[in-house]
Length: 257
Image (cartoon, rainbow, N blue to C red):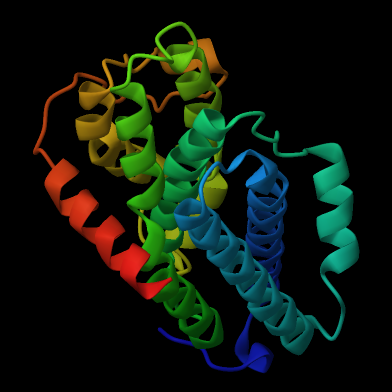
């Protein structure tokens, strides 16, 4: 069943939807702040233009969600977002290499999280999410491309695994806890498609080609403070090679900037 207006929603559905909107607003503003802070580390004009474009896009997405939340609740989500950022701040990158890793993993995690809501049964939410997904596609490969290029210089051997694990954790946090009753409810009423465990696995599979190309290792989830699904995840570095596909997407993003 699909819904187009708040008046038809029951209490739990509405509460879950409000939580989803607030969470999305938090992620959009956190991303804008992360990449805005990181501008100081960008070494070249070609990349500076792309990161500035990314920050502007994240702010536009934040505005979209703020507007949707106000239309739905009659209230502002901004105080909630600021409170959550104070309680659970997303760390900032402290180098160009780390900023690239953050864009690769934090941004990619957000993209996979969004895709799980693109068939949301509340049509106004679905419309906003699909708009964000379409606009996010343009820079999905950018961080991966930079990370692979920088890692292959050999200058980051001592730090690469620690930086990777730091931002892998942030990417995985985007999906929520697997196997919860709340996730099952959201699936049952059509707010999301799958349990976070399945989305986590897709995200892991998507980054494996770049992980292999950089000589990195996927750590046990408990090592980075992530609750593993009951059946675990496949962390073996096997799967289709998507580096060429992602590089092509990055080139398209560069032309569009």
